[in-house]
Length: 226
Image (cartoon, rainbow, N blue to C red; front, side, top):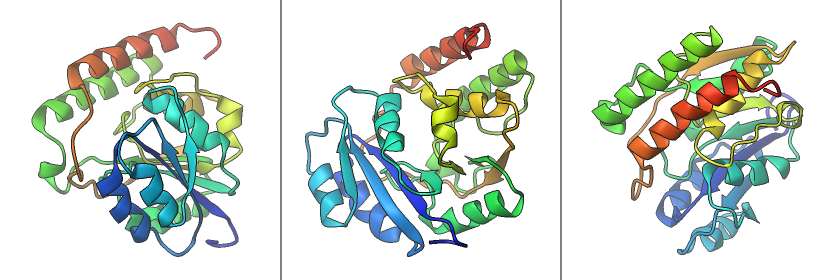
């Protein structure tokens, strides 16, 4: 536990055997529960995670959002922390981020990677794409976010079911932030983290995923259910 709160960490994985073997041991002792989502991996991701004490949830539907929805629904802790299985997000800052949430009585904290401390962690085209999507978020929703595409979030666990993000793909990341921001009474903020070069193979299809994210933002803006 950390300051009287049970901490759950959710990690979606597709073929992250090498990364997850390094990520789970790096988590602080205050983490009570590690939920790894095996999104149809063909390597030993699931076996490796189980061997390191994680609870593995299998999700047959391919997709970043599908994996997250399965993992977040399985959480039992008071505070949820999300991160990737490739070592890019800092496990050593989890307690800092949770403290920021608790000290300011927030409901949702999105970890901002910018400004990058290690420019090797993200190539130029990804930085440009992130800037475009973050600018589009400002234009469409009139809310400035430093990093609309960050995959590390810290939030009070019951909030996930309240905002109920729907995307099964990469847009899940921007959707969960926007819905948190737009929900009445939810206190949202960002906290700067150290983003690192990934372990293992890059799986993001940047141009296809970038266009899908942009189109999803437009649809979300004019969706009466959002």
